[in-house]
Image (tube, rainbow, N blue to C red; front, side, top):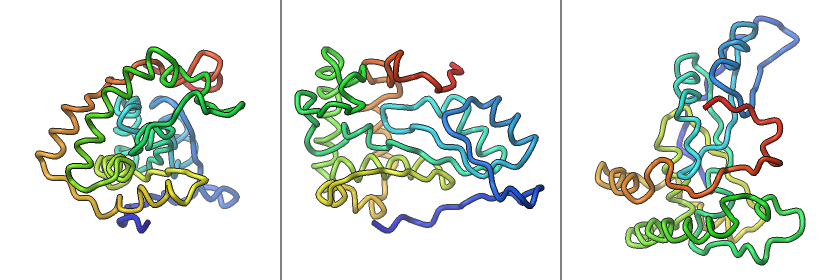
Length: 200
């Protein structure tokens, strides 16, 4: 997939021994504190159609300070695909096996909602995965989604993401189908969230 050109924002390093600072899963106040010590080049956090927490300050802080925002898990750990993953088939050690969003009754509630988004994508000839990545790209020119897969078939599903262009009507329909906060269940269990900075 060839991604559209993004504005990669780099601040000049004040210390020649440090080329750039990157932060992950931090609160806006931490970004400000770190940036005051040394320019921050990138902030990474989970961001997708069902994980919208960065919209509560992190995206705005990155834009204000000229920092590239790196969105990981833009496909919701596989939930935004043409076929839903089967929790019964998750192997031992799979992060999703104990993730609240993939456990009953949350999983059934989430797939029922996302099925409507799948239909929206199919009606336009777009794969669900490509559309989800395209949505992330559409949120700002300094946002870089980093989807991951071990499968060539999965890669093929989202290869068209850079060709999708949303109309205002498309954006409104996506917002109606998947409003912010629609996901059932926390994005991490209490055991999984250790080390992640909570701020809201």
